[in-house]
Image 1 (cartoon, rainbow, N blue to C red):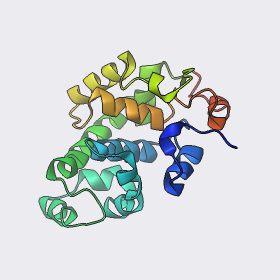
Image 2: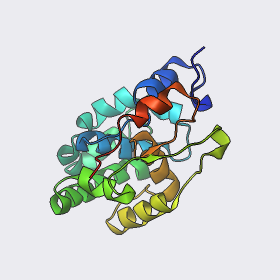
Image 3: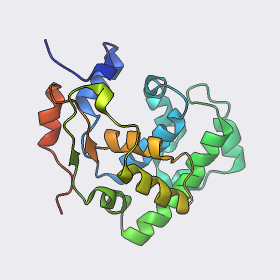
Length: 194
């Protein structure tokens, strides 16, 4: 039997996400933006709630085209708040638009968001060695630093716990447990390696 991290259970959409996406190092700015928005939308909710709406989010937010999202008007925001395919929380939708604007400023300053975000882990995936899910932290010194800097740059829904969930998802840390079949596979695809 294939051993996986306990959190994904047997729900097919969760298993698929665990097996293909979670922990794989991300270097594409569009995908970084998508993950940041989805992790912010998750605040106070279960990840599967967001995962089941991922395609609806992609459709509603122009496939997470950061430039388009940064230009959303009040009228567009009001329309999003009537969309049953996403979490219709005004603070979270407004945050997505504001975060898009802040994201663009980071791209301009660093050349890419990828260059900026990977600095928090020295441009290398942190390879953890957890034996069980209960060993995983909710936040770390790195996620604290990331959260503080993102907030300083105008991001909201970017607390340390949300940042750590993002780091896990985007492969800045490898938090698959040691006996999960994905641990070694993900370890073979480390971060930038600068």
